[in-house]
Each structure stands twice: as structure tokens, then as C-alpha cells.
Picture: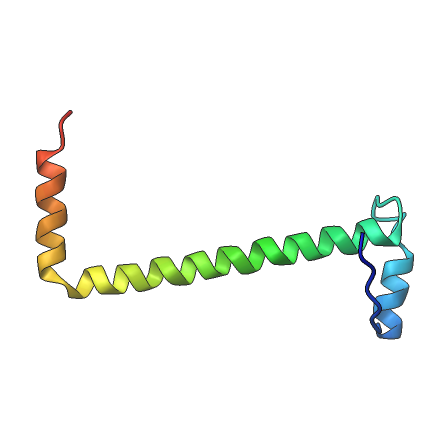
Length: 77
């Protein structure tokens, strides 16, 4: 496993030192959990932005709307 060195503000360091209170076995597991949550949140935000862009394109493209409606109507049940 790779290691990283970084600086924390005193209040953030104090929070990290209370890892046991939050149910973590050590500081590393607390940091790992926080980074994984951040990664998931950033990926979800990126997906939401992408969906918003697709919605915008769809709303402005009448031909695409007609094509979609035709495909839905022709879909076998």
C-alpha cells in the first residue's frame, strides 16, 4: 500500500484523532472511508451533470423526441 504525507489544520487533525469515537479502527481506515465517499459523491455529481446535458439536448431536439416516441410505440410488449 502506498503512503501519502499531507498537512491538516489543527481542528481537522483533532477530528482525525477521534477516529475510535466514529467507529474506525485507525486513522488510515477513517481517511480511506472519507476519500471513498468523496470519490462516490464526485462521480455521482458527474453523472447528474451528464444527465442534465442529455435532458437539455433532448428538450431542444424535436427529431430526437419523435424518434424516441416512435421507438417506444414500436417496442414489443
